[in-house]
Image 1 (cartoon, one colour):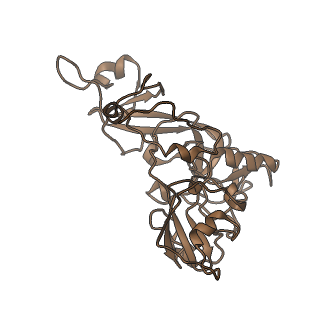
Image 2 (tube, helix red, strand yellow; image 1 turned 90 degrees about the horizontal axis):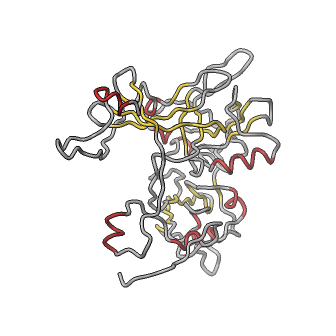
Image 3 (cartoon, one colour; image 1 turned 45 degrees about the horizontal axis):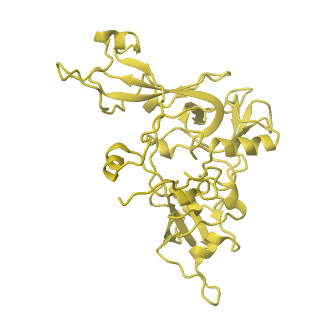
Length: 347
């Protein structure tokens, strides 16, 4: 996604009236009536404010049910400090939910970071600790801010200088904010999350991953596959070990506890037409993978990227061979990476 994608061509906003609860995303229901919740409030000087308010000659907002941006907007104030938004307050009692354009989320990616969640019972002499961990894409707004050493060495402050409740950032955004203030992002010994006006006491207690708040660490995380005897596979996360205590991997991506298996298209044997995949019967691919305690195969994953076409393809070739879409190139117009049209065809 382009930087500040909520300000780019095609971004849409759905009017929620006086409700601050989104329809397409999750936030706790009690936030709607909780005045201590920090909301993302637009400045009247903001270009996005002008689009959503649509003021008449007397300055009164003329709210539309849906607003779609037909141009890229410059960020203003706190808009420049966030990577994503959920619900925006335009005026008191007037909220819009941001509807992000469809975007493919890849299951495997390089440089995965460990993210953590959970709120343990108090540990004497230590305090609270996180309980669970998994992997996240550092280039996606997938986890909340966390900063170590600003209060005490190896202690993480959750939601450090967050812009609004429910905020998610890129890893680089969290790291820049933290290091600027003399701290660091780390896989902490304990956490601070005791101010309800600022922080969220996160507990890993929901079966839906998107409804559990995760926090960034600087630790690495490995992505791999578990292959069952019937060829179904599960995505496995292997977060780096915490230096101070044993945390648990989130169950649905844990090699011993996952029950989330999906079908993938394996190559088939030309003679037997049977799928070819690692099993205990072929020593997990002649040793390419390792045998697990439940007689499945655990396989490392290597990513490979290559150019699909070296000349202008036909429309049919594009539709048949390219499976992942992208936002319009003009959405990236003011990013560090830009795209230019080099060749066209009548198709």
